[in-house]
Length: 122
Length: 108
Image (tube, rainbow over all chains, first blue to last red; front, side, top):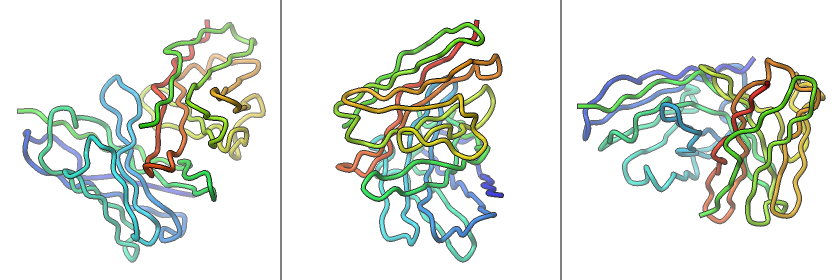
C-alpha cells in the first residue's frame, strides 16, 4: 500500500531555514506529481507546492513563493521542501501528498502522509 | 485567484442526510474533490471528479457539481463521520490546488 513518511520538522527561529523530506513507497514514485500541503494549528488546509512527476514543472502558493523550493529525487523515491526565511505564520503541520492527474481537470490528492510539524518561534 | 466558499458548520442528526456545499465561480466547469479530516488525523479523499468514490468509501458518500456550487452529500449519517470536510479544485490558470475553508460536520 502507499506510504508517505515525512521527516525534518521541528522548532526553528524566524529567518532560519529547514528542509523537509518525504520518503515514498508502495507505488511508482516517478509516475506521479507530488505536493506539499500545510495546516496551521486549528486552521484549514493550505496547498503549498507541487512538482511534476519528472521534475519538469513546479508551482507554489503565493504565500511561500520565493522562500520555499520543492524538489524530488526519483531514484530515492523522495520529495523535499526547502524552506528559507521562515516566519511565524509558516508554523503548521506539513503533509506530503500524492497527486492524481485528470486530463483537462488537473490534480486531486489521493494519498496523504501523517505530516511533520514545523514550529517557527523565537 | 480562485476562491472556494464553504459554510463553517453543518449539523445533522444521526441517520439523516448531510449536505455540504462548496461555492465557486463556475465551479461546475471544473472537477471538484472532497476530503474528510478527523481530529488529529491526516485528510482522506472521499469523493473525486465530482462524484466518484475511492475504494473503501461507503456508498452513502456522493457528490454533485453544477453552476456555481458543488455539494457533498452524506446519507444516513453516522456519529463516526463527525469531521471537517474540505472541497478542492485545480485552478488551471495558476497551476494551483485550491481548497475551500472547510466545514465542520457535527452529528447531534
